[in-house]
Image (cartoon, rainbow, N blue to C red; front, side, top):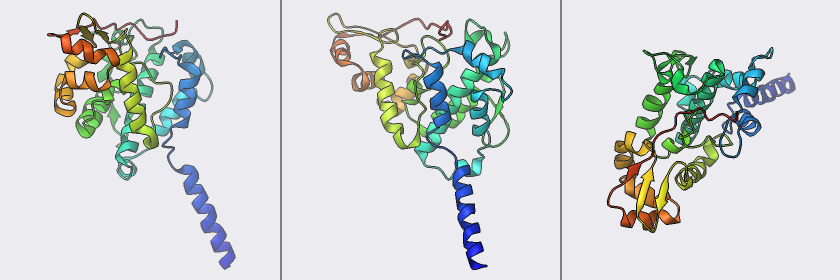
Length: 256
């Protein structure tokens, strides 16, 4: 009898381990490696074809897994695990929104005149209530974790967004990943430009839209650019009396 009890407890432990949430988000990494190019372009057409399968596609299955997590469980995780979960959720649900409406030229074409795509309720998260992409970014992520690097990690499915990373964010490697993502974003001449000789600096409009974040949590825009920018950024900033902003390209970040 005692042997049976021990065996039952052992099997129960294995079952709990099997059901434990995967903080490496391996399913999302597999999708990104399969459908995202090295420059962050997404194969939305292939994802839409995958969605048509009987199981609803691998993306749908990953998102269903995210939606099983409840607030109580989320609250037991480390700060980095929580942050990684929310960043991955934002990016994956954004991809799903595009797939659901594909083909589309821009994410801004979704939702109509009165409702922007970021305010559409199309998924549940944590408390079982309908959520929007804005809910994740502006209620659950930015004001809670106060991390400027979030702006380099969340992706709005557009050309001018910081590129979609080709792997999931994980709690165990989050700091390393966010540091690399910030540097990748600022070194991308299509999104931020630093001319060392002339002092001409033109940066992403994101720094303008969220200037208060960069001031409050990063010491100011110039400090952030100097800390994370490419080698020429410091020289350019020392000569720049003003900083300009690049036009934001909302065209879809599609491979097609």
